[in-house]
Image (tube, rainbow, N blue to C red; front, side):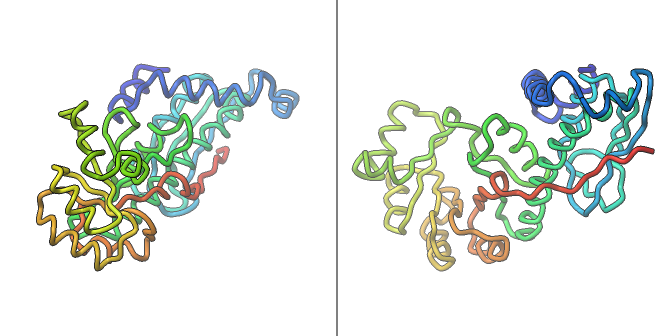
Length: 285
């Protein structure tokens, strides 16, 4: 890839080599020969085209798509920046190069752009729904294998914030951990004894567990499948002593009602596991 693309990926908080490896694997899925384009276009044929938005939304993945073009020798120029809102008919990228290369790049670039922009667009809807409250929209580990870093990047582009990146960087004590340990207190203390400086969040199903988690020393609590009234009471009980995250059964229609309870975060797995692709097309010019 070019130094410019490398720099753009680093500025986005992405590992350039990891992205390149992913793109190479995606391109390899198409095989060595394009049996449609090669009989139709001569090696010297060239083409120009625009990747254009066909609906309103938020863009993510422009520097990722740039890796596709770099690897195939296609000249590209970004017309928008990731995180920007776009409207139907707006050009996101312009490309030029050998026609065969442009067509080989097309689907891989679109797969990445439409998926990541879909996540960013969905996240923006949630962020807009809770605008004016203190609550932020946060993702989960419900991501596609191999795409976590990119999907979580797209969440950031849409105005959301990231939860832990994996099992290694923060602890989340869930119901199975509590059941195995015997109590919230024992599970929390077991993690704290081994990792005294680690960020530890405790999932609580009841207000009694919230009180137990606080007493154990938890400073981050996940309110799992609680009603709005229960979450409001949890906010009152905690009184700022721990950050609170709502989780389970959340919908976009309900987002603002949850946010006004006073929680700090809304955990939305659907941002990454169920986002609809954003409609983008390549048209030759």
